[in-house]
Amino acid sequence: TQLLEQSPQFLSIQEGENLTVYCNSSSVFSSLQWYRQEPGEGPVLLVTVVTGGEVKKLKRLTFQFGDARKDSSLHITAAQPGDTGLYLCAGGSGGSNYKLTFGKGTLLTVNP
Amino acid sequence: NAGVMQNPRHLVRRRGQEARLRCSPMKGHSHVYWYRQLPEEGLKFMVYLQKENIIDESGMPKERFSAEFPKEGPSILRIQQVVRGDSAAYFCASSPPVRGEQYFGPGTRLTVT
Image (tube, rainbow over all chains, first blue to last red; front, side, top):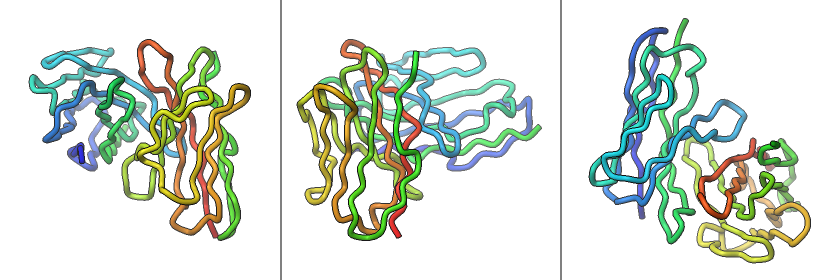
């Protein structure tokens, strides 16, 4: 059974700080996706990474896929209250990466 | 461009009743996936469907649960004779045929009393 461990589970910081959250597995994934979920809503796709060592930037968010495609990190620069939410990583497997395995998420709170 | 639509957003059922959850994929998407999110747990894959075909139902409980995606109309996740343990948020996602990225709907929160 493939598992994704996310850390930390909870993170509370002040506006303007930088942070990094992690997603680790003992399994290799064909692709890895990061989502953000707000209370009462569905996950919203942020990025997909598919190549070992790949780095993608989305404004203040930087995503990295490990060389061995077993782990990933999300770094946020100068966090803002609007970044508050549950950050989920999901690994794709199966012939077309359709069967996503989700971590339990990191609940980020950015205080003004 | 409308996103993935799910209804109802909240559903309350008594033990033993049936629950029907509906999902309309994004325009142009032909693949539908259902996931379940239990309290304190991550989302778990249940089933993957294309029009009129179940591709992978390896995450579906063996009894009481079924899913369909007819030629016309939304995808339906059906839970017969619900029990308290079925209380959860059920999310539907859809993807375009080529890229495969999944876009999620807002979910249906099922409460079994």
